[in-house]
Figure (cartoon, rainbow, N blue to C red):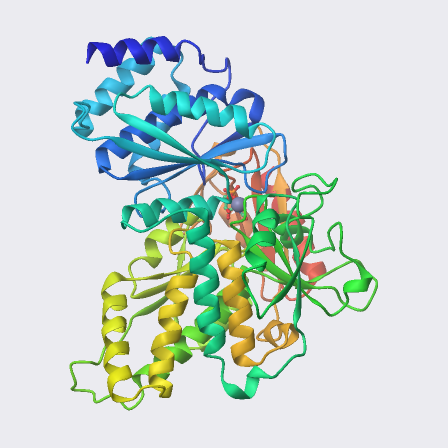
Amino acid sequence: EEEQKAILFKISSHFPSPQGVKISYGTAGFRADASILQSTVYRVGILSSLRSLKTQSVIGLMITASHNKVTDNGIKIADPSGEMLTQAWEPFADQLANASDPQLLLQLISEFVTKENIPLDGTWTGEILVGRDTRPSGASLLEAAEQGIGSVVGAVALDMGILTTPQLHWMVRARNKGMRATELDYFKQLSDSFRCLMDLIPNKHKLNETDDKLVVDGANGVGGEKLEILKKMLDSLAIEVRNSGKGEGVLNEGVGADYVQKEKVTQHGFGIEDVGIRCASLDGDGDRLVYFTVPSNSSGDIDLIDGDKILSLFALFIKEQLSILNKEVDKNATNNYEACLGVIQTAYANGASTDYLKQLGLEVVFTQTGVKYLHEKASQYDIGIYFEANGHGTILFSECFLSWLDARNNELSAISKGSEQQKAALRLLAVSNLINQAVGDALSGLLLVEAILKHMGWSVHRWSDLYQDLPSRQLKVKVVDRTAVVTTNAETVVLRPHGLQEAINAETAKYTRGRSFIRPSGTEDVIRVYAEASTQEAADNLANSVAELAD
Ligand code: NG1
Ligand code: ZN
């Protein structure tokens, strides 16, 4: 124990916390200008070692700032099943990151180790998989993380290199399930299950060659780079990657899913020559996915197919497979299983998508912004589908449902091999292998979209026409103290400052189909404003007046 203290003390003194800045955990881990992150990353390294020892599992540490500008960086931690770090440890992460000197740091750690009963006696070896995106600051920050991990006796870091965030989360999950977890294993699982879905495409759609090319904007980041590798393993899909990170373009600058979704204009590398073609865009660390098309007018605008519409497509497909599977099932038979399907959205979901999903008869639940909240909720269903409008989402299958499905598939393959019912079972199993159940993953999401469009025999336009988005507008307001705004009810209602919600209500009531809310961002120093109304002009006006109220 004394030895442990000495090591921590010695190494910590090389990582003084930045003066005069308070850093906080936020929606998706710590994020800031890369130049001030050395000590934070070092300390999160320590935390991930403790987390690994506590859970006696492999933990992940990812150096990325996702869609933020290239000079930013950040840290995301993956818990044993690949999901985000448990919220219960976030306050400790905050305390560590802000501890002013090594003495205080040591004291915090030792109190926490006692409180959480973390075994530091060497009976268990902690293992932390570390990865980073393509940001130039990544290599040196990753080193700081390794120093932090190594500061805890009995914990080791394993450098997985440059990865998308979801790849790292996937590896953590796979390792803890005792599966092979290299990057090649990841690519193989995705391409194998994609092939499996393509083999199950109804005959009538197999020959449909139209609409076959997909063009993908890689945000000049790691996602584009990885897609270049993955696409070589797919034989039935032609993908062209632009902004792949190999050219001159800067990460996330005028490109990527966040830009496309928020600005709704064509990004760098796309234009009038792409009219009508099916296009997709990834974000800087490959965990967000949106689709879009370039319309024939030369407005510079795009037709966005956002996370809500991806969610709708997934929900429709899964619902269809479930109903085929349960058709003709004897209600009293033991092989009957009414899978509970749930759909999770946030307040940013377009109102038209929610109406559509409800009209399909689906259960729609709302949570706060941030994948950690959506994921938690989705895990309460047999099949939980969650998406943020910005394109971050996935599908979770419960162990219980999957083992029933597996058994049911075996049964069906014995009594009615090749039947529609068995195909439905196989499709659902393939989806559970294709979709990254650790966290939203642009690459696996993209393959699932492609397989479903092919299954339905749909063009991108047919998909886009599922429903018409209500016009919406998002704005950011810079304020002195964003924490002054406190919200409730999945962030749709402002509690403080007093009177603000009433003012927003009064403003919103002036608009047909008006809806508006504000919340403090968890990743940037701003208040976000969202407004929706029946016309674009009205949505813009509503957003502007609410922004003025928030200022
Ligand atoms: P904040 O900055 O808390 O709004 C943003 C996104 C989240 C989530 C996180 C993490 C919006 C409105 N917000 O969070 O959905 O993706 O970043 O990347 O898109
Ligand atoms: Zn991201």
